[in-house]
Image (cartoon, rainbow, N blue to C red; front, top):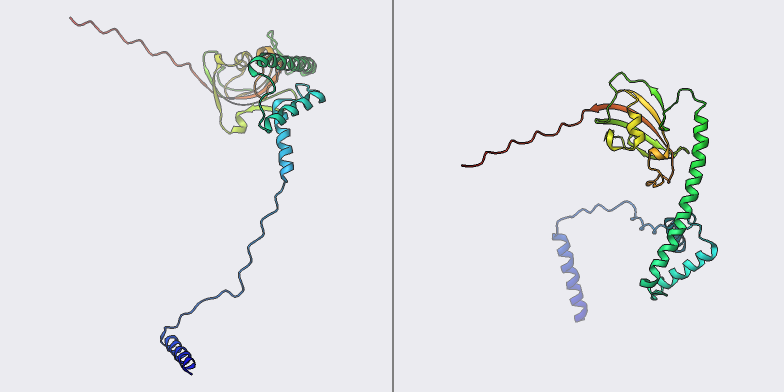
Length: 260
């Protein structure tokens, strides 16, 4: 009985407490909260990502261009496996290094030689085709150009700086540089660019447009540049926006008289 009495008192006390507590309204959602979304399934498996990473390494190294044979690729993978497993180099780097450099240089020189011959053949055929266009002028240097829009201003001098919009392409049409794509004109001192530009831009007038066909010997020769293979002919579409005179050198300060 005593336990029942205590329980009854407790319930009454609780009821009084509820009666004396100010009413609190709680806005409950009309529906139960949605369960958290299941994590999205990865677009690629780890194996696919590793495979792509291997392809990326192979392309950056240039296995195709350097003409690695299937046997050489297998040996290369053997070396990668040794490195991945944390093992030491199979040979002494100080001793094998020079021979390895020589081997890779021969691979590279072979590739560059074939690429140069390929580009020279394509250039000869391309320039032969250009002869059919009577609007294209050929200069003794080998530079070809075509005025695509006459300008009404002055022609720049080699000592001046030109402000231009331009797009440079290879003869296959691939773009390697373009101020137009960057959305900002470029400025160049005309005596500090490739010879094909120095000579060709002088053939146009401010406000005009020109198309330059620059053979390799008037561009980067056999050296090449990023996006420009060795021995490449370069084609430029150029708009001459402005010409800036060369900045005159500051006059020399007169010598200060010596103190007496």
